Image 1 (cartoon, rainbow, N blue to C red):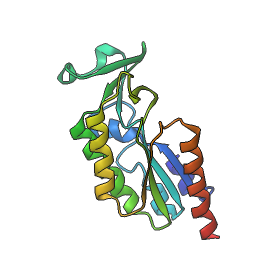
Image 2: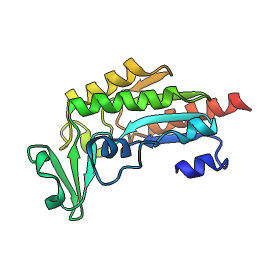
Image 3: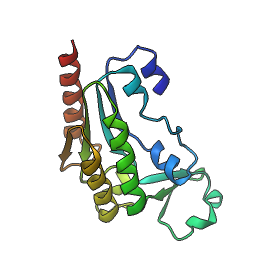
Image 4: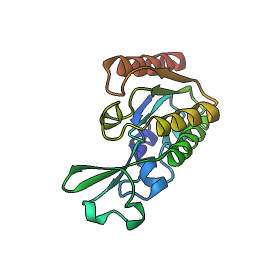
Length: 177
């Protein structure tokens, strides 16, 4: 996605799943490198960013997870993918990273937070629900962001959240015309 953004073929970025940062920070297998989220800044295009799936770090089969994480909360997505819940310390650091990245955008940008769940499995009653970790993430986003931060009392896959994110991006893009 980063290379497509930088190609000049994109007029705006709607990036709702920034999960690669959890892998980058904690050591998962699906990280996108430390330049993840930098392309929109370099391309100077409007962007709407959400902390989608920052509750999970991706590993391969369960027996490939490093022993140092043995005490953590895991979800076996399928035989080849094991997810590990980020904790409050990691979540706070992820919030600061995302905010600092988005603060560097020259074009209009906003951070959108779905406060009920940042993934399908982090909703109340689901395996990765962790109010303390979520609040650490949301608090760090709010504290560090210099761009608007909007909160919605919905889950990330709620159509109302998708509509709010799309509406915000369209507004940013219309201002740039």
